[in-house]
Length: 400
Image 1 (cartoon, helix red, strand yellow):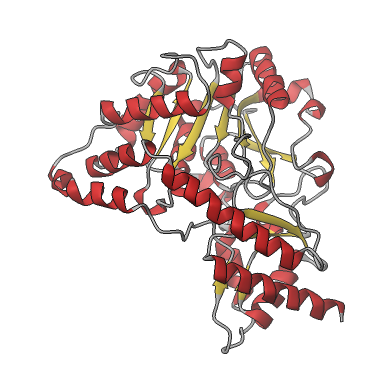
Image 2 (cartoon, helix red, strand yellow):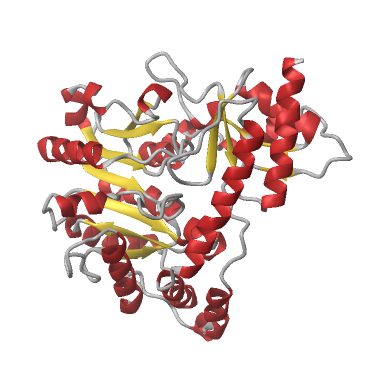
């Protein structure tokens, strides 16, 4: 077997299961899971209808490139959403449907990284663990850039030495961030694009939370959007990943896309032809319906606004919590060690949250996720309110 498989750490939820197995929650309290970022809002009925209407396509092999009409729908959505120049994003050359961002992020690293003894893949820290695994299995070394509260959880990219940028082949970004909810702004993205020009590395921006935000007048800026504002309509060395999982409450559809530099997308298509990861036709047709509708996305954001408003009102008196820039996570400091906090909360209140240490690695002598927990406000409003009240009761018991 590939020896690099030995470098893979257990997934955060496996660690969480082990932590919870050491205690017994109260039987009189229903379990509420705020640990997994799996949307629980209803999936749009019209998407389900499109899926069933086209179930006959089970008899057809899908193509790796996807339906031309889906690629065009995605190109049109990107152009509208991120104010791109008309026709600058070619459906044929700049867009590729994928089976959710998770598999595409991992696969892209395998295709993009040149196997060299000193190859680096950079990512934020804390981070989505797929970035690490993708780097190792591509034959590169992951290098983690700490994200601290003092910098609003954005890495200090200017502190990265030139020799590190020179070895960097791929820089993963996550904006809005998982787990912090931070949006990387125009100035930082412009600076990273300039660094990419100087050192010739690829920027891969994971933007799957981009449609969950709270100010309708200020949607999160995207990497391709900044490229367009800089007049870089070739999107050189830049790709973005988007998904219907969070935007449209369709995690089971496994539908997303990668878009950007045609010189990266075209060879990635060749890789995927061998990878065998084409999206079923009926899923593609349902995806077209989802990308063409914004009304359900607006309703989705309204639900998250309501949950954040109510949860923050309950927790703010006992915890240092704040509204994130975007996304559906609360990244909350804990009064005791984060793993002890998560375990005690489960034992006393039957609420599950994810310890921040499980989402980070030690870098520069620090574990930046330690001392935080991630709370995913994905359950119903009523369950989120109930969970917040239980969390408050638990924190108050620690302070008693």
